[in-house]
Image (cartoon, rainbow, N blue to C red; front, side):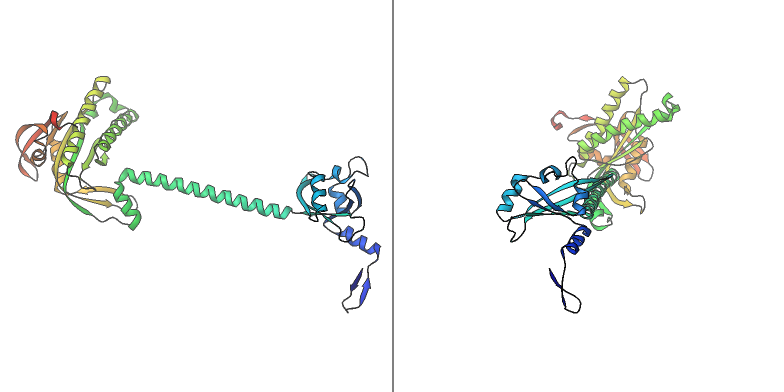
Amino acid sequence: MTQLDPDNTPFSLDGKTLRQVTQSLNTGIAVVEPEEWTVLFENAKFFAWFPPEQDADEPLTARLPGFNAQRAQSRVQAGRPYRFETETQTGARTIPLSIELRPLPDHPQEHIVVECHDFSKQKQAEYMLESYSKMAERNARDLEREKERVERLLLNIMPKSVYEEMKDYGTVTPQLFENASILMVDFVGHTEMAIARDAAALVTELNDIFTVFDRITDLFACERIRTVGDAYLAVSGLPEPNPDHARNIAQVALRMLRYIARRNSAHLEAWHCRIGINSGPVIGSLVGVQKYVYDIFGPGINLAARMETLSEPMQITVSENTYQLLKDDFVCTERGEFEVKGFGMQKLYYLEREMPRARR
């Protein structure tokens, strides 16, 4: 082989030099004849990767794992290279190898050259890329789950439309709702109950009751605003206006009372609640910066609180405002006039039941 030295002077490589160069390559090289796949020549790297196990004259088919001789011969005869991947073991290390067989150009005996490349680094890069990809997917799933968890928590403390506004704009504008009905529930005498001596049991009982209250509230398109101790506050008519706000909140109150009565008949400890309802204007807004709370304000909720205070155990007291909205669909009993703090003399009513024609 004639080469050029740095001074452009031709020089030749003899067979010994070529052999030394070939043996020093970090690529496995072998020359085989395609009839019996006899290995005619191999360099040190090829021998190290695919040493004969029993006989020094073992053909390529016995030494090369994953080698398909028929397919290789077919492709080489068609003038195309045959490529595949395999592995070899060097000590405790597994080395992935890419193999390519192609005919020696212009060779009279049509011998085939076998070229083997270690692509461990490529495999490592692919493995790292796959690992990073899986990690990114896992992090994305974790982030999505965390987002859903946060959303569920926020939806527990504020109406969905309020949450959507906060998510879209980062803030919530206080709103005046002219027509809303507010329900307040409070339990009486629970501190004297035997269960009050067991804090865990008390919380469990309240949790069971309030869970059912939440279901009843949702059933009639009302919103639970908050619980404070054993007090429960719900509202209808906000944040989405609802012309049936008084009717809906009345149905909620009646079903809450029936649930408590049924529950008492099946439990040793009896719970007795007072319920107050008022209809009127309220302001709804998100309160707080680090700890969000959606709350309602205004005279409407203040009068509802007075109705609850003036009610009797296992009774529902409604204001004159609410009575005027319910009188055609519900049976109400007049209680008379009462001095209501901050509101003067007010006519109050007991909400008894729905009229049969009003039931859905």
